[in-house]
Image (tube, rainbow, N blue to C red; front, side):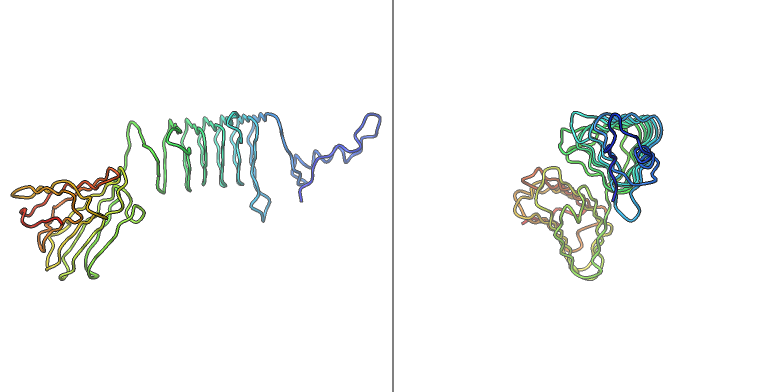
Length: 304
């Protein structure tokens, strides 16, 4: 168990013993384990490297007051930087964290921030690069702002509750495929199994197996695109359904158009889901709007 620095016996007129001095040396050189608490500001011009006690999860660094770190900071344990909205943590070097980091106040670095888990409930500002290999939560309300003047690199997903803006955003939509080689397909979609904005490419070329996709409950902004990878064969129909009679929109076919008004199902007859066909569904939170570009004639589709 870590010890605590003590001043017992240190009084005017009393003898200062070696233990009174060596306890501080042992604490700051790491010779012995001591708990050290700082209640004021901490100004460090060199580097700080913190590692947990071997065999324990260990706390890395807890800072309750304002802190200014002028050198590089490396933390191997869990870190709590600032627990008060009125206090800030400023690092003019780089911050490398292999544990978890939590800030309630502002965290600002001039160098790079690298960590496996970074949680910030107020502002996180970095003029360098931000690299996160694990999960990151930036802000807890749509009004919170995250400003990064450098690059964002992620190996996982980035999820936002409001919007992402930038001068250049490079990415691609999630692509998925579905065939009917395993038998009749009847899928009820969720936003978890089918991420929003997914493009689902359908190949219905095995036997007479029908394919049915049922959209998730309507949520504002949720949208999906379906495409035909090949012209359907056999006697199976291709159906796109809403949870109830909330499909509204238009089907644009090779020879005419057809309105879809308060329907539950939009159906392609057998062999009419032709290669190149595309359907776009978007919800406003109460209905599903459908725009279908069909390469078949209008008598090849129906709604019910």
